[in-house]
Length: 80
Image (cartoon, rainbow, N blue to C red):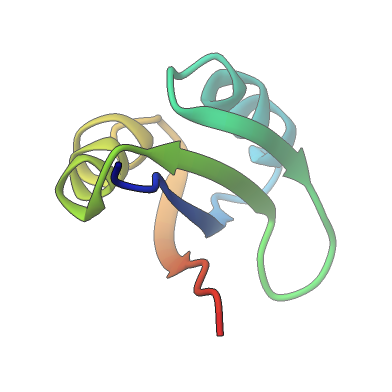
């Protein structure tokens, strides 16, 4: 049985948009957590997908489509 893919998505937003972006992303299927944070990124998201292709579609088609996002960095979780 295939194991699902988990990832953290680090997001930079337009100034003042972090809270709204986190709220909108939290409602997307596959997103398990979305929080606005301080530092070089404005929002950190935890996401889960069946495989890497589904994760890619989630990020490109759903997450990056949220208004106010300027850049994303997807970090898949690995089990070493």
